[in-house]
Amino acid sequence: MSGRPALIRQRECKQIINAAKKAGAKEVEFRIGPVPIIVHLSESTDDETAEGPDDGINSFDKIMRGK
Image 1 (cartoon, helix red, strand yellow):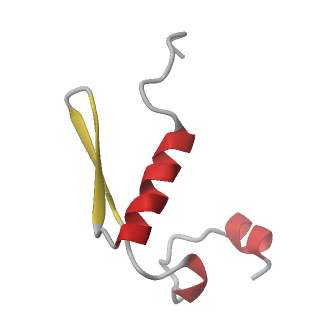
Image 2: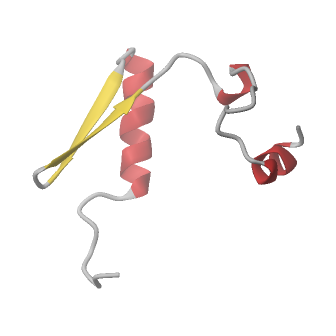
């Protein structure tokens, strides 16, 4: 930890992403200094995604989600 304040907070990122979803954007790009961060937005939610062997969900996630 650097001990300096963050340039952008998680709460602000969430608000920007939610507003972009409502506006129908397909992606959001954050520029923090010289580094661009691109968040690709999809129309499906976590509940609609199909589960497979390599779906990115580990056993802890399944327990916490009740699946």
